[in-house]
Length: 268
Length: 298
Image (cartoon, rainbow over all chains, first blue to last red; front, side, top):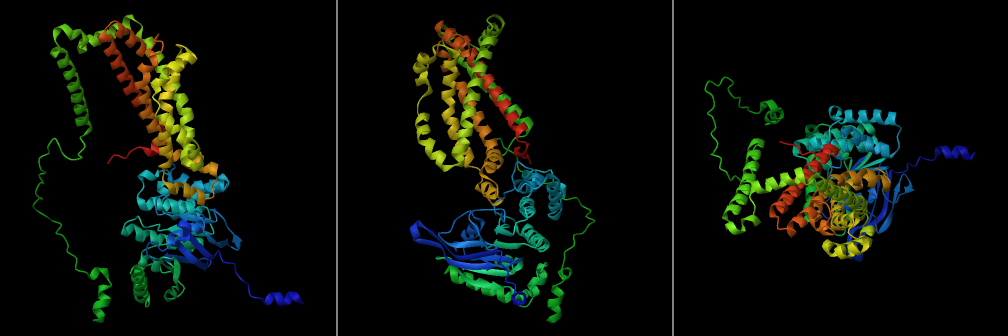
């Protein structure tokens, strides 16, 4: 009889990432970069961390990546406590991290080599991902001869090829010029949609946040806290691939205005 | 109003100024300002650069020759001309088996430098990668760097006598401590995100060390080695004073005793030429080993 009752209980999904009461203190507690921050990520959602500089959004991302440790709090990936970095959380940095001593192809392969993916499968996946980031013609090119956007595409392919549960991006397009940045944003939306990934992206660019994200977490500074948690409902649960379409949607201008106002409040 | 907005949405509705395609008159030829010899940061063409390099060498040789003739005739034998040094060089190679001395010197440099690199490079990389290793060794090594290598000559003579080992040991001491600190700097200078990328990809510490830190730092390390082998050549004469028997330095010291200035200068010229050759070989090795690091010429 118990079995029947069990069937009726709703399926509780375990979030891909759960951050509970994270604090990060420096200088023996006199400076709080993060103060009691809690949130859960939703599966297959893109979350943008937005806030003024010095608000702790980078610290939060690095804590999720395991590159920094919180003073207090707990971090769970699919319900499991995590300590330190791991391939379940792939990271894309603002600085170009495609290794200059490896060709584009070897770079993409490198992450899978670490995970000991068999050679045949590795090669196939590498070519696949190089195609997805439109670099198949540059497979044997060293990063030195690639443009900034291409280097970042190599890093993106390398991270995606490792198939991490969560992808963390620290201002990944911050060093790119406006047009390349826009191309990369479109490519990223396309790839994330295809690969079904949970993403956290830091950006200081409000327009970029609205374009990329399904949800925006706005951080306030000193101490770093979540000031607002904004689901981007005006998109109607879709991801808009064309920027022109996004700009025309009702609600876009209002949201952008609100975010600018929040930013101004913080800067004061 | 409504129509104006919907119209402007279409990019083609913006007025576009079409340039006439059938331009009859050719655009005027642009005459750049006259180029002067001193232009900030302007690089000469390869051809011009080699002409300038040749001119620079000629200026040096001219000064040398002028120095010779400006010296009072009575003292002129202490400042031999280029021709005299050239003929001394010829006599050395043709009649006094100088090639044997040159190869002995080269061998000493090679062995001592290989030994110093074999120790300095791994230690430097470990110190640059791990703060605790750095804290363990750095204070002691810093003290060693301040000790002049020449001050070890008496000690080395007591330990080894006037042997090859004493000379190689001196050359070794002369470069190893500086090489360690250079390799340490080269290793700490790698982009920190390379290591962090390795960590987030789940690489082990040994994989990050051998697969990321070493290849990232190696071109700079080779550059440091190239600079330190030059220092090694500068120590050669000092090293070969220790029980001078053979080697370029020994030949020069012996010549000094008989005031054969032309032979001393021939020795200096030989060391200079060998130094230049070493440098070229090192650059060649770097280009071959690190094709990915070759400067793109624009």
